[in-house]
Image (cartoon, rainbow, N blue to C red; front, side):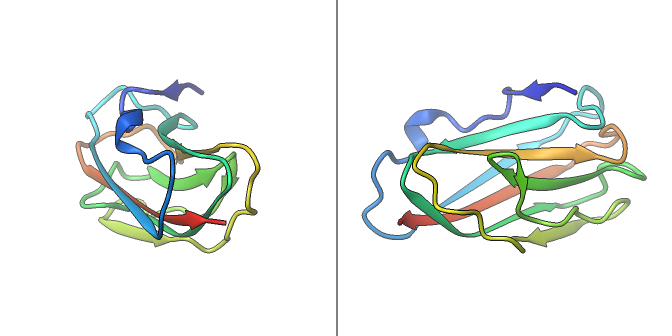
Length: 129
């Protein structure tokens, strides 16, 4: 299990202060190899005191026959796993608690290593708590 920072959103693209609802969309093109089962893909870190009100993860094609991803905030799954073997979208099913510390957003790869190039899209909608 590795934590991959290659795909992290640059800090200057994540606002420190939020005046209203803010939505981040981030697309990643996965390589055919190099992302293993149980790897974590760092997406971003949100500032302390924000509340995530919606989030989803999508891939436009199969990541591999058994490979899925799910979105995590501070290590807690907030979406179900995407569907293996096909394009898929999974929306937030669990709202994380408001945190007094920063929120780390990651994707968890599960089931198998990534075996096909695909485009992963993550959307995170958040606001001041």
